[in-house]
Image (cartoon, rainbow, N blue to C red; front, side):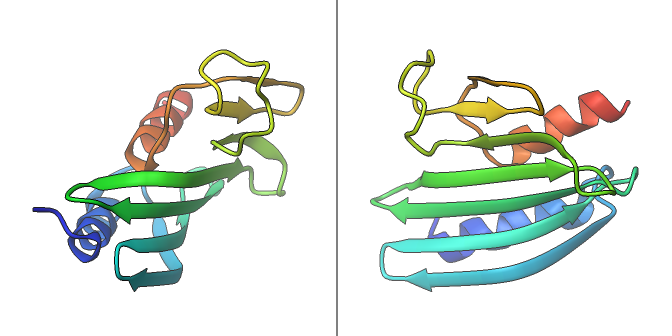
Length: 124
């Protein structure tokens, strides 16, 4: 069974060994009972950064309840932000969506691994 502690540990190890990740800063982490959150800043090879937030619940398995992954360039301009805040009910696949400079569009449900896969595809 995957506990929140183990999930966060495995996620942080994944970040450390992932070749696209230049740096990782754990901003905050809290685990209490059946819930936990993790905030990290991931540096990428082009000096862009992804500010990541996952709020997870444990009920026999890990489920990501809330998330935000904000990718910005070296000057702080938005590249993309994926989140599941329920403020765009008009989009397909609500509440999952992505913000870019000019628009908001439907997205699949995301996690840190999927976000890094998207970033890798853009950077290559």
